[in-house]
Image 1 (cartoon, rainbow, N blue to C red):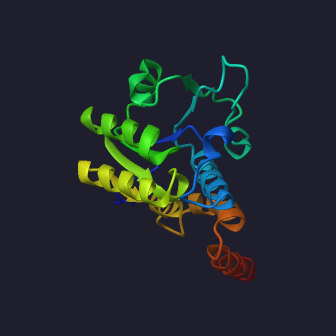
Image 2 (tube, rainbow, N blue to C red; image 1 turned 120 degrees about the vertical axis):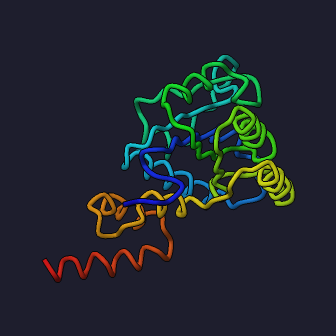
Length: 209
């Protein structure tokens, strides 16, 4: 039985504005790390069938397009991002309706920029009575300090900071549960040093079979 705060059954993942043009000025996290972590988080939600809401800002309607990272859009080919022109996603009724439609109260958020779109959305969701968990290492700010100040602000308001792999581990705490095996390919591709532990586990599963 999963007694963690976050479970597959009570969570909603909100990925806010992970777009190439939005990401260009990010300085708080290396591009390859951001891409790896966001993709790993997206794949985990998809593998475990956790409802996921995608948003973009100014992706359409202008002279140039700014779509989602391919690592995210390829995981959710049938999910249409909510494109908006306001920085706070919670100000868009379509986003609020998408959250409400899930019937769930625990929102896991990651986004660009941490100090703007992510923080504004997280603070508004908490004011509306939702529990917010923000994935710090799948988000990015214009500078390390901007990212950290935004994280502090959200924490002071009651949000819980997490890492993307922390989310995976909380959704799948029992490594004897068959659902845990769905995370193996994700950990191998995106888990860094954790991949070695997965390789060890898989080798022993094969040996004992």
